Length: 133
Image (cartoon, rainbow, N blue to C red):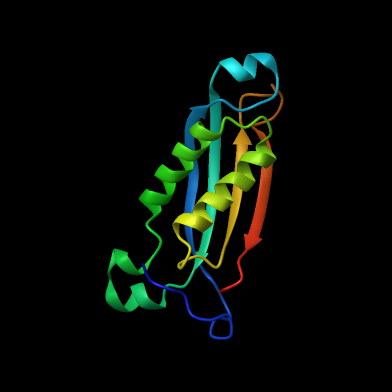
């Protein structure tokens, strides 16, 4: 794994985007939501530094978006959260742990598209920036 530069070296952030990741999982607090999986859509922005990968052209020097997407699905299914806020925080922590040296921060949206008839979706957006240890 690579390590991003110190915060003094970075005046910007590059972004790995995962948009429209759809799958089903247990999420919700109502009794029927605890037994039947429902559709969830995740959008994630993983803030990093592309300096190394733009020179090396190697996946070893960036956040692997396929691996990040797989992690988001697996952790959502494992978590079985009642609240989308809890799931969002859980996913941010999982991404931070997995890509510890490569992330400056994360913005994540957790959307439930099939809850209300008169809207496209309901959900949350959370952003967390990480101190560079």
